[in-house]
Image 1 (cartoon, rainbow, N blue to C red):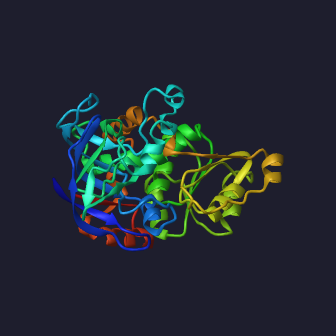
Image 2: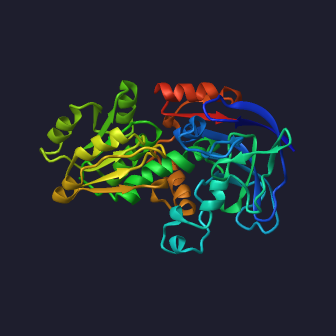
Image 3: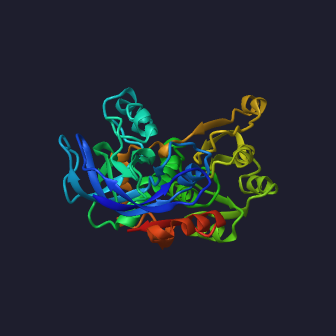
Length: 366
């Protein structure tokens, strides 16, 4: 079948909207008609070459849609199901999956990095060439063929634009607070970066009962939005912020700090905002060629802990439906995350708006 897709042909060039050919799903694969795909900074890193990937490639990893067809051997979903797409699927049988860490499953890591399917081939073709897909998904397209393990059935009354967000930004941010850091009631939290991920870290901290919850950003609009999502305080993120954090935490510093943008300089600032014995959780993904400088002597003497959070340490088949249930009960904000929706042919404008700081989250709707 033919469809429209946003293709990257080489780094530092705009997305191109092209007509491509998509093959039917094969063994263990599912054809999904995409309803919505989120505008995420991780895709932008591919576009500018700081996360090198084979090209031409269709990016997009925060998607949701409806199952249109299934290949042989598919048992997890059926035609007509509404699904969230998971960019870190678990096999269910490896060491990590057996230890409730399917986000670290190693069975699919090489496959997803290849941009191809399990048989080493692409299901998408353009001008006689194979087209790669990001994270086994490639959701900046009208349809995708993905592994069944990447398809998570969800409740039908959840708008698919919101389901797309839960599949990445919401799971990553809320999970980082609840699972990776395991924030407890009354503990203090500082969140550096109040974009799509940071707002959801704030929501997760609120669900955990944290107090105070301090949001830090350089964008006044994002700081105001952070208050709506549960921040008790909103600070301009500059060199003076550390003293303000200490003033809000009895002079000690935060119990937990989260860095949501993947900027080494911000990671370092978040580290210094911690109290002795505090925990820094790195949620944003830094460019592959960068290094973060953290003082080893301070880590030792002050017993500060630094840890990473990949996909919020979530178990996607369990947690993505749970997050949608929380939204249905009124406990989790989702509609409020979407600043603006775009058509696929507006994708370059969507990323320009993201980079300007104008978006909490943008959504490509099909």
